[in-house]
Image 1 (spheres, rainbow, N blue to C red):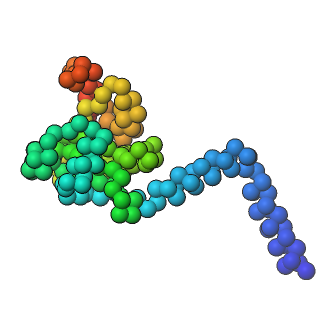
Image 2: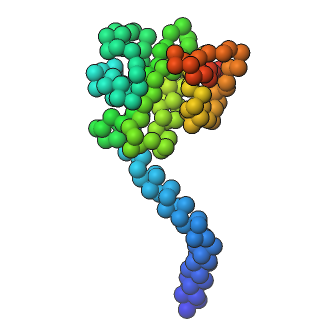
Image 3: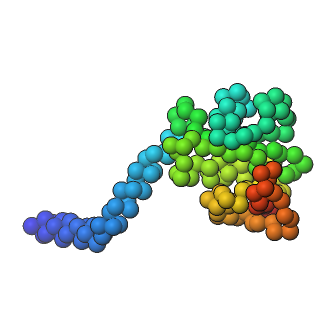
Length: 178
């Protein structure tokens, strides 16, 4: 009988622990669980330049021509895959112990899930493995999400230069010392 009583007390304590959670917290936990499940199959990896990855980025951004992309020996890329589906590409230049982030695109249905951030983290790892000392990037002033995302990774704004894109929009130059 004593064993049964202590078991019931233990179950009651566990029950009390779970009843402390508010309805708002439960909603948050469910949203987090759905978010986690939606990205758990995603793999971020270095990948070879290809026509598929070029076409993927070109769908979202106006980038250089295919021959310049495929033949540039200083261009590398990181890709995000959900199972076998290409869902993100980040192209960067690595030369003389420096990396410059050139282009990054994520499939519209996978945006706001941290994919771009994970690709940048992978590029930072690649930079460290290759003894790079600096990573730079230029972001459109209107792309606040990208600026904040890079700042969250430790990038700082270089306010010593005043740059503009061909259409006149201000470039925000960012850098990260490794």
